[in-house]
Length: 371
Image (cartoon, rainbow, N blue to C red):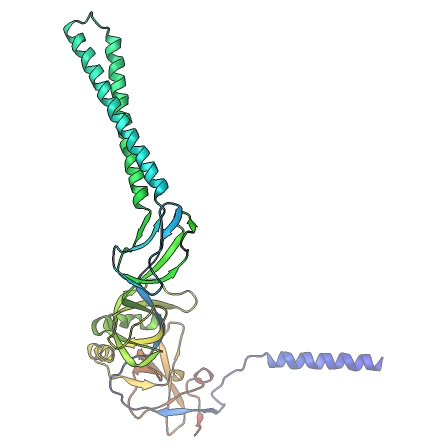
């Protein structure tokens, strides 16, 4: 009985301790909070933050035949550069050639039938016009119906010839643009179905590079359109490839609240960019200068950890009074993100700000500066 009582008391004590740990900490001005701080200085306009991405071809397609058949020729190899109109694959044309020959024969029969029907109708029509009693009106109508039927057969036969001709031409698979063969999905002598992928080809004459930009910085994308950007690929970290903004996504990601921005660039001279290469991109340094010049701003770089936002997405920092060691909330404007933090306005060189623990401070709270 005593052991059971002790066990019960131990469970109650543990539960109370757990509930106590789950209570939210109340922040008051009376508590002196230790913080890290930074005395800020004036910065020259500089480039923005790097954004990771991956290269893709400007055009890419999985090519297929429009008709089924057996692959007779597959004359291209992986990695081969092809020009527009080059033959990539060919189906065995025998069945389609036979179908075309048959359709052409039916067209010739229909043409002969039309000639006969025309002759018969014209003969009875002349007789009827000269002597209505020599032939009946019903016979004229019959010959006219036969002529109309012969004309319809000509139309059907011509359509069949056109279809058979098209099907025969579809046994050729040609490149729709200049590019590189990067994958073959079938082998020679293999049977394939219509619309089954046969060859994948990429147009790598120019390369696209897509990055995701935070919604708070989308207003500055137009400036990057004016000044351009550049991309650095992981495999060639010392080469900056100039790029331009091609298109901007109109809808943000529901999870990250970022917008896709697609850059486009020409192949550099020093190396060849391949689809799938990873890298990073950022706006040209001129973009930040344009933003600052248009708005009459002087940018100051601060750590991103020093900033915080309210429900209206207004950005703030905590400014530290060096004499009283009290903090006050200051509204700022984020011009751009940088490799080390953020470029902002609303601060003056020489002011001290809290660089960590912003969520644990309240206006007017006294702090202790950590070395």
